[in-house]
Image 1 (cartoon, rainbow, N blue to C red):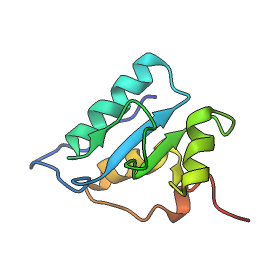
Image 2: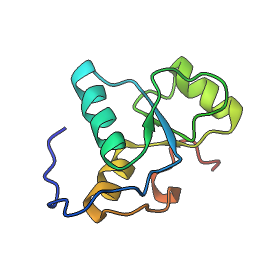
Image 3: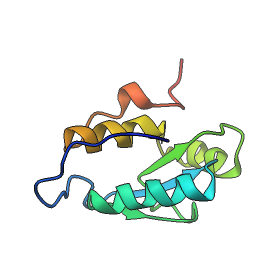
Length: 103
């Protein structure tokens, strides 16, 4: 996951109030995503517990976390959403990044 970010000139808070869980990533990638989520003011959650998770970033549609997210109506997104939000330093629409959209 190599990505160059624009310089962050101010504290970011566009993910404030959002709880984000990840699934299907290596430990290194998971730590990077956790850091990015927290940098943007979000809360990283290790487990897909309860229904407090706002979004799930996933690489594996067959994972237990992804199955729970879909069952609970939690949007499942590609990691690119987080990268693009950070690059633009603002919250972007999730629609282009949905992995569990009904076709």
